Amino acid sequence: MCLSTVYRGEKSPQNIVMSNVQRIDLQDDQILLTDLMERQVVVVGKLIMVDLVGGMAIVQEA
Image (tube, rainbow, N blue to C red; front, side, top):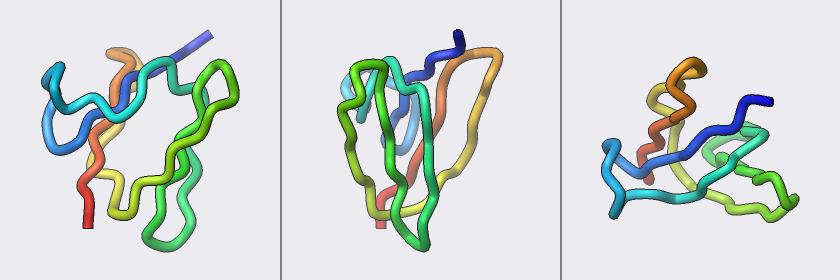
């Protein structure tokens, strides 16, 4: 199972948006993050990068 941590702007503990993210959905300018427990967070902005091996993603808020 591949789970990721999503960060706002840059990889830093204070910038964590959500941990244990299992799914990332993109709709227009919204990023829908879903974690292992099916909790969801919506970020308005864009997905900057995803590192599948490193288990991390970076988003930039609008």
